[in-house]
Length: 188
Image (cartoon, rainbow, N blue to C red; front, top):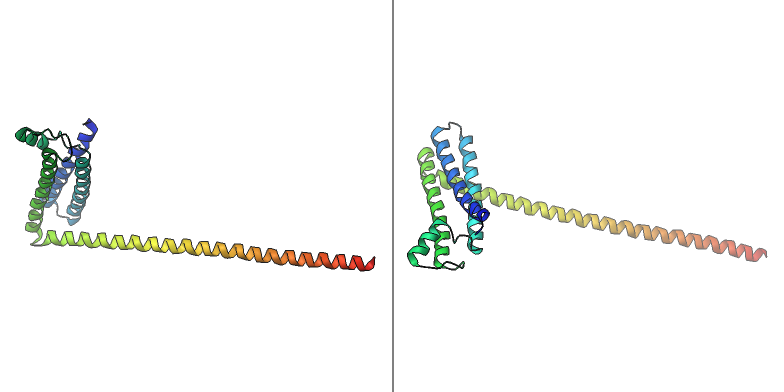
């Protein structure tokens, strides 16, 4: 495994630990809820990124040299060369569980500070806002599509009008040419 991949995975774990520590510090020292909220936002972002890294690493055989994988590989005498080996699966799952445990402890601390159920309310509000954002994006896409359809219709109508008016001009021109020819013929 290349050093950049290993750094990316361990960086995800470290970022989540750092975010959890930041929220804990904010809980203990901050008098402003905004400081705590900013740290919680950072936690959600880093946790999401770490989950993505774990998932992609598990698929790409990138966890085979992590400390959990080495430990399980050693204890089980597992070669751990593919993503389905027990060592790799265990390493990914244990890393995920460790993050979940850190977040669970943090939720307990937040509930102690702000009252029972606060963490659940935060998660529900986050989910609600995610759904609202999805709906807003869906609505904006639909509006954009309608605008594009209207623009296409207007452009089609414009070309249709141009063709009709051009036909009229040609018809009038042919009529005038015919009249001139008729007059010329009768005069001769």
